[in-house]
Image (cartoon, one colour):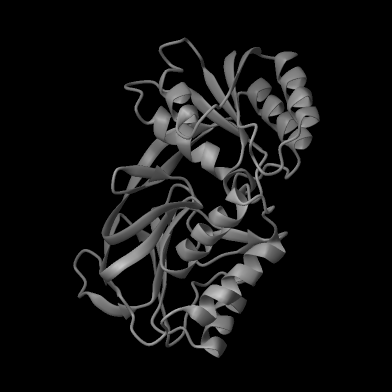
Length: 305
């Protein structure tokens, strides 16, 4: 199998030693070429050209941002696309962990090589927000604001960590306007729901992780459609109660409560905002929006994991 390994050397958990081990392990079993990303969007360009260059598999070694770029590049390929295999090298690695891959790069490589040898692969669906595909989540509101703040901190040389995310979230929560909600949700054949402070659209579960603890606002499984979680109020006790529900891994029900709006297996939805609202896709801050349309795209990409 001919494979292209795309490495993001600036990923949070990336080390030269890890990169060398991954290249040697994959190269021992695959016909491997390696490229390092040099600028934002480069991974997508490499992925978009991968089919024309004869690759059967694109392997990413980086974080969720690298995976997202590659997925969007692959979706530009007409006809048969190369398969995708993600090796975790970032701080969250939500997509790789959702696929069941080990959190360490060495373990993930061995799992991927075993899947290649066994011919194990699966088709997954993607979410589409505006003209950008996402693998696990997109959101408007405080979660996107936290991501924007963390991007600023990383640009100043601070390392991303669970503690840093928690501090930033608490600071944002108590500094936000919790009196005037901006969002309105529109879904097919249902009346609009206004007065929402934040909205998360998920293509998979979990939505994210707090360290080793998965946070599950919904139960999407990469093939069943988009799930939705939104909050009508941002009161401290009700917000903590919602978070508690999302961290109960044995809970098979959608989060519920007077302040929660949830839905499952949606094919499309729209969030409108009364004022510009922070927006992210797969943990990448994309600026502010006043309206975002979402759609589920079934059987979009083949993954090997």
